[in-house]
Image (cartoon, rainbow, N blue to C red; front, side):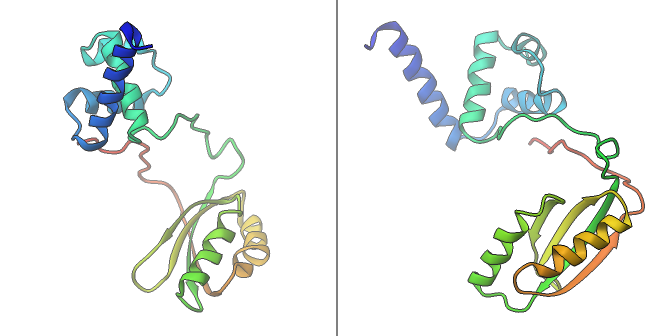
Length: 174
C-alpha cells in the first residue's frame, strides 16, 4: 500500500510530527493570524494571503490542527443579542484547598452554563469566574441557586462590569 499515496501520507505525518516539537515559522504565524480574523476563509484565499501554494497551505493548516495550535472553529455570538449583556466577575474562596475539594468545585462549576470562564488563582481568592447574565435579578438567581451551593464554597465576592473597554479574541502569535 506504499506507492505514491503512501509517500504523501508519510510526508504529512512527518510534517505533523515536526510541528509538535518545532517553533512556528513566519508562514505558520501568518496562517494563525489570518484564521483568527476569519475562521471561514477559504484555503485558496488563505494560501494567497500568506504567499503559499494551496497544497502547502492546507498541509500547514492540518499540521497546526494536528499539533493542537488550532483547537477548533466556532461562530462568535453577540453577547447582547443573545440576551446576556451583563458580565460579572466572581471571586470564590473555598473552605479548603485540598485536591478532592478543588476537583469537586471544578466539576460542579463546569455544569453552570452562565460561567464562561473559570480560573484557579493565586492570591487572596481561590477562583475567578466570568459569568454572563441578563440582569441583576438573573445574577441574584445564579448566586442563590448555584454559586453559593457549589461544593466547598466559603465566600463569594462579585464585581459587575460597567462596560467592556477591550475584548480581544485574537492571541498574539509570535
